[in-house]
Length: 376
Image (cartoon, rainbow, N blue to C red; front, side, top):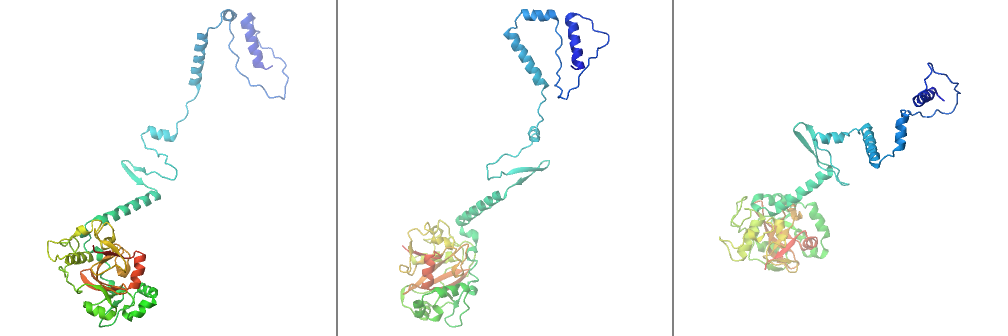
């Protein structure tokens, strides 16, 4: 027994029995043990015998027991220390925005405070990619549906340099060098088609100068299946380039020239014009003339059904040096016996004639590099 226990025992005996405590404590002999000491708890304060007897005589009521339990719980809650708030809770209490939890695979757009009164927008790489894709789709839609006058001469950007990129056939002079694309096209041409044609017309080419239709047909040497009366630069606005024409397209562009030819073939050679920009409600660039929503009543042709007066649309394919952004459209002036075409064109304010070989056309039609639209 420890000294503390002895002292508490003597105090308890003195309170109960009224015994007088000795003037000095009596030291008992305490044996030393190697066992761990027990955990000591404070003894409850001694209760006078009179109060203890009264408590034993009168049983405790349930109301008193519940009130005592509530008082004990309140005392325990007051003694329990409150948890320390986290930094996120402190920021939320101060009115600062916290980062929200996003679904897996997505990172939210969140403002990052840089200084008082200013914020910097932060976006993840995936968010930027989706934003740029959306911007590209919207831009393409606007370009396809805006008035052609907005582009001025943009749909003929590549026309000015076509003669330097492609083979140009001169009926009286020396031919220019072939481009690599035309060399590949020549390699795929059939031997039978090449044997029937002269060396100059074994592949598609631009015909330089302003030859007559009879000169071109004589140089090619193939029978004619269908042809217009003549090929000539009869465009009523020749010499003008840029700005909206009465047809609703752009002066000196391929689209304006073809609109003129469609009016001429319908017997309208002066204002008021019968056919204008309403020919192509789904977009007026040269490549868009291939769309089924444009040229109401017109059909889609093949090498067997095409005839003079039809048109050939290059839908952004880049063939024959045409624009990969806006495409090109040409007027069919003659169809030869093997399906080859003689076309009349405008581009960059200039008139020119092209020969499209049947071997090239067959390949381009199958890959939709060109589309033939036939008049109703």
